[in-house]
Amino acid sequence: MSRLSRLSAVKILLGIVLIVLSIVGITLGVEGGSAAASSYPIVDHQLCYVATASGFSIPPAGSVRLIDQFAPNGFVPVIGPLKENCNPVVKTITTATGKQTVTPITNPQAHLACFKITAPTQAAEEVSVKNQFGTGTLEVGQPQLLCLPTWKSLTGPPQEPTPQPPNLNHFTCYAVSYVPGTAPYVPPGAVSLQDEFATTPVTVTVGAPKYLCLPTEKIITTAAGGTVTYPIINPNKHLLCFKLTTQTPFPPTVFDLNQFGSSPVAIVKTKLLCLPSDKTVITKG
Image 1 (cartoon, rainbow, N blue to C red):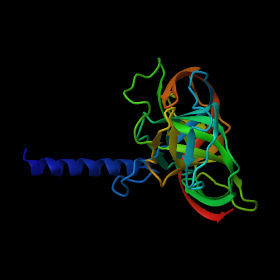
Image 2 (tube, one colour):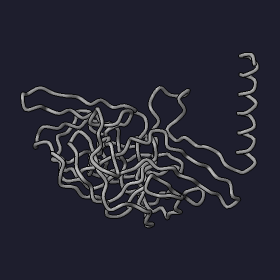
Image 3 (cartoon, helix red, strand yellow):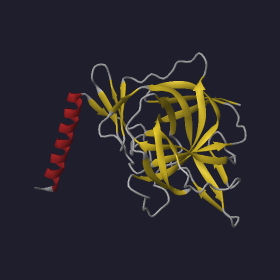
Image 4 (cartoon, rainbow, N blue to C red):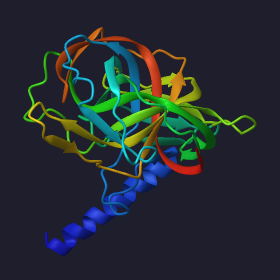
């Protein structure tokens, strides 16, 4: 078969696939944008679990500076224990008519480990945040979590050549609540989730937003007095994390590796669904 004939056959096959998907009512949605539209890596949905761990080496006080869009000059947090462990997750929305929109995972190795932080009081913000659940107007509170790109294994400490997976931001997560009198987010159908812990999709009930997580540059001051900077990978996409009242399957223990070291992690319960989102600042304190 000639090269031209092979190309024609591929085009025909792709056309058949698209027709079949249309017939069964399934569309593929990629929240982070297509490769053609952006040079930045796609940001996946994340399913987050309450977690605990004691094996990480938390940097000493004063050695980490975080820079994000709310804090362009940066701030120095006190970093506490692990609070949440997050997996990339496939999200499916099914409408009342049976049409499905599936948002796939694009970076299956890119998990997040989120540590409690306390920081100097930040200026108040009011933002508009848009994602697949619609557009909401939110009041932004204080930073609560620092999320590190993290390798995760189910069988033992990850054996990886680098301390973190590629193509994923650090995130600083701020507490959020609805601006009084504004409309809440409403998923456009039933939401089901499937991460590596689940053998089948699980239909979940989505609550109010809890955190808005901003892409973050992290600067570490070393013991020798130098600095190491971890830049932002994708400055455009944030994560808006919604409370979940549904429990999904999870193992009792996983194993993490990130810039804070390696540790067994106890998984406690399902907590949040984080959607890739676009943010616009309305007012700034």
